[in-house]
Length: 175
Image (cartoon, rainbow, N blue to C red; front, side, top):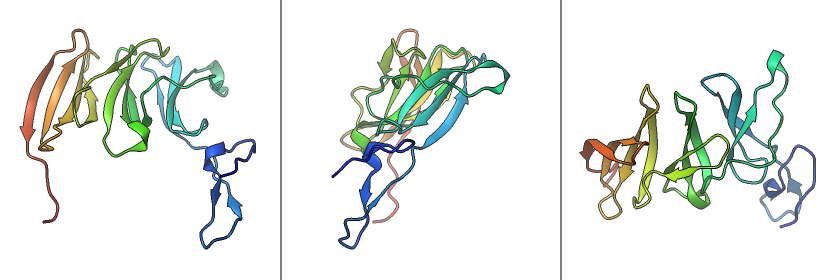
């Protein structure tokens, strides 16, 4: 596949249209899920400007000026699907899809990208929940490899411990 170098478009988004034609089509870079930090000094968002959906953080300038684009995204381990700031502004929780797959994971990343923690490294999949009011705990759902059963957990970021709030079998829509 050839790559285009067109301002405002990502290289990976060059696609050939169906029907055997060689006519290329370009798709614009997407910016979504804007989230101001709790103190209002930074803005986090998801963008595929480098070819994959990653989380980005920039300083919010005063007087409504445009946010400067950072040089690199936060170092998550996959495509970012959704994210949210901790109430204390120390972490950004990201639901990621490694290699764009269906099995998601949850990571917390410091806004400067210096610290990254995988919250369920041994799970088949995990989904992002919500933060506790203090920002010390994060709700996630963890799915087991063999059964696919899920456990809703509250993870304490201070020491990595978790409390299972509820558990149950996976749902099957059709048999």
